[in-house]
Amino acid sequence: EQNSSSVIAIRLDVEGAEWWALQQLVENEHLLCSVSYLFVEFHGAATEAQRKRLPHYGLPEDIFERLKQRVHAAMERPNCRLRIYWRSFWASCGDQQRFEWRDSLQAKA
Image (cartoon, rainbow, N blue to C red):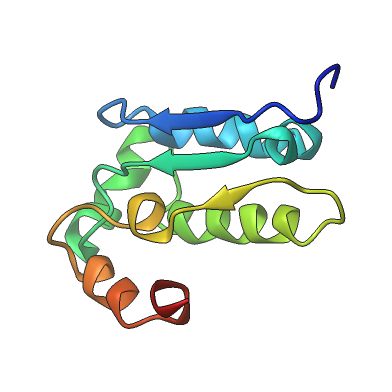
């Protein structure tokens, strides 16, 4: 808050703990929107079989979609600085989402 021109980048590659770290970040939209760039490598949600195991860790199967919706809603707020590198944020190398991203509007912009 004291230096609104500073650039804050967060990179989360914490081998499965990214779910809980990101949940904490989206709970505070003011904090989330003070981040300039967010890069996350998700583990354990690229396939349907992996998503079905998430409840064993106390996470809903659709945690990925829930977090994405909350982040998108925050980004729509006026003065929200957050920018996401879609490929890095929503896809791990080689999974289906990577190829969906490649053909998306964000990738072509």
